[in-house]
Image (tube, rainbow, N blue to C red; front, side, top):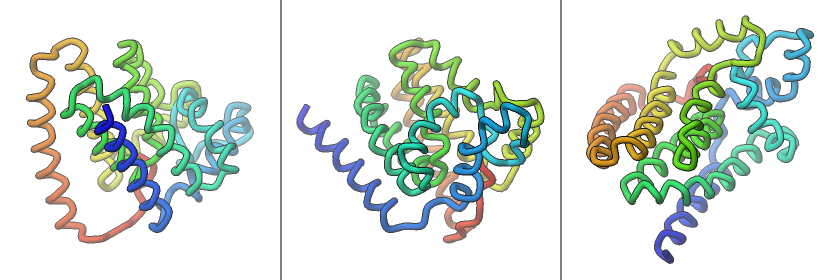
Length: 219
């Protein structure tokens, strides 16, 4: 148990240090924070989403209180997300060490590159508590509860640049939790196979893109 605690503390410390010294993802200040601030106006049809956080009302219910606590400062918002994520890291240990490592990687990658997906990660991992969260997670990712025009933003975002990576990682985590619940015999094998595939893909993309840090269009 002590080793597990040390591992989680080390992950949190490394994430916090990274967020503290590196630039935050480009889309947070011009899009995510304004989207969170304007959600009431969107719901009252006083403005449109227009690419600013085109996610579901459940996503807003998760992220708006955290953003308010961070005073809508993007860097603080990410730091708070990372701290809360420690609870989900602990929960992921119920999937064994491979499951924990898979969530640690996916959660860290999303937190640092696409932190707006962190809350969706939480819903997926909460599927370990109740399978219904596996249904709720995709509903939260899609703009369910927002005006219909927001679905157009979601469709465009999916095919923008490398956003398929972020969606794919969400799908991978969903499958891991699903297998853990309903097909535990193949859970570890699925983690290894998917991990190998992601290693090849991310390695290829890293080599091809170099250190390009262009905007991600809110995947």
